[in-house]
Image (tube, rainbow, N blue to C red; front, side, top):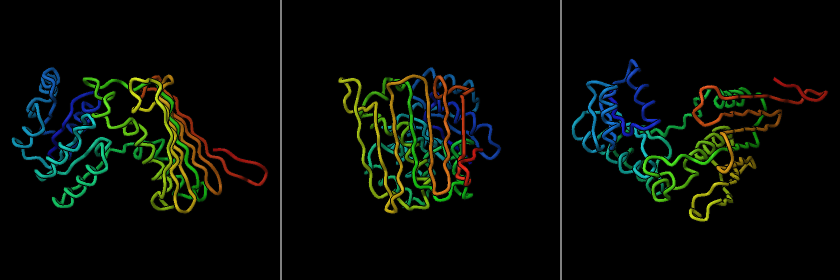
Length: 282
């Protein structure tokens, strides 16, 4: 499959390397507005088309998939253009910054007969994915409660400070917490789609009141199952905890590192269940 990659920053470089190395994929084009990044892409991937805009790439190359690894606010226009050009689309989260734009992309994909995939990569994690395997195997009975907590240092600014601009980032819930909502929905999928959501939040900086550092959201299903998503960006390091409680046991797991990119994080996991005399652990 011929891929066109839009975005060649910290994460885009990883996408480029993986696509180029895959035996069933071809990295045909790279888009980045930075001249320095374009020069780096040309040096790293000789023979690959390098462009300043996504439209230039779409008009020049015959592609099957467009992979969008760019700031949130450009996800919609780039994905829409790719679908209209007849390409499948792989989007880093979020799909878009508004619900209306998400629905519009889904409609475009249906009209074009193409697929959109949002990169919820935690489902493929050997740690967070293993929790779903245990749930599906009946290891804790019926899952009834999910808690996902994030405690970390403030977000990086992003290129040109886009992550601290509400018009470009949309909301910080669309950064990491969007993955946690996805995990909770996945872990509780036997209960169907969520029915209600309640959230409360605050910001530690009066200069950006609409960008919330501390958020707690409670998502409930009609069956009574529920998930709580907690985020604080006013802490230190990078620490994520997941707890899933079921009718016959519970799973606790955590991940900690100095940042979200460390090669040697500290991971823990445990499974506990009643055994008549107390509890067991694995």
